[in-house]
Length: 238
Image (cartoon, rainbow, N blue to C red):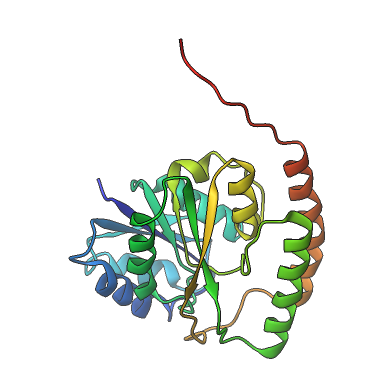
């Protein structure tokens, strides 16, 4: 069984798949026993064919396919459910996250208390447009003020977390943007780690500031309700 599963959700990312796969393999081979789980969210391009072809060159690669487009959170969750590793690293499929950061996250995990179950990437120097950086800055400030999750960048795609802890969290669409708050709600600790960030290699972004803002309002209210209604109780077995 692999120690680590790298989960990568993709939708119409055919040109970003080969270079990202090569970088993941270069970063992790000879360092850790790992597998790569790509989840194709019913892409309309030939992403699935590119992934099927790549399996011959990457024995670590597994491919999960959505039969209907379901979004990034569902793709991540289904990838984690299919994964065999006790720990999960996630990457965005557009190539903006750097796989070379994964060994650093693993080293930080090994040097940290067991109570920390999520190591969240923090894009200190973002390579996005000015409007995206501005929107994320305000969204992070509002989210942090309301949820008190003490996390500067919840939207970063590169994260390292324990599989069991993740699957114990409540699932809903867009939950991947609230992992720090959800992990803290479950009683675990979170650490933010500065990571590299790169321009998109090919293709176009699947999000814009307006649709993120519209769903973000409802999500914030929902996560806030979950936090207020949570209750944790220590147990012992006689």
